[in-house]
Length: 129
Image 1 (tube, rainbow, N blue to C red):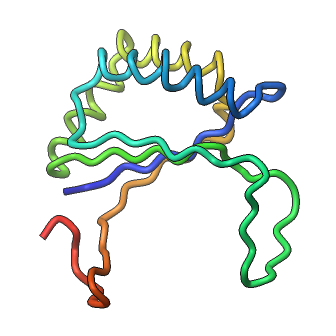
Image 2 (cartoon, rainbow, N blue to C red; image 1 turned 45 degrees about the vertical axis):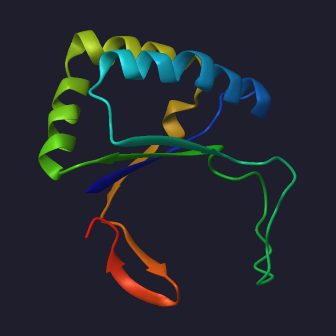
């Protein structure tokens, strides 16, 4: 199993609620129509005003992103197939055009992860094992 994580930022002037509403009610549907479905597809939205700084790091300013999107694929090959489809102009065009309506695309970060976890105090195992 491989996980794609994407960090997205809303367009200036858009509230977090407007951003979430557009993403959930428009963008998710478009992506699922155009791309092969992942095993799981989650959006983790930032909660406004809920700064968490237990180690007194004094984080300043607004966060760099408003949502962390996670999608899991059964294999690297399945992910690469999805990525190839996403790169086709007839697929990429509508997705990019839609993102420009509600995202600051210059702040987007995409990363692949091999996920590890901890259960019952035991750590260091791959979640796909």
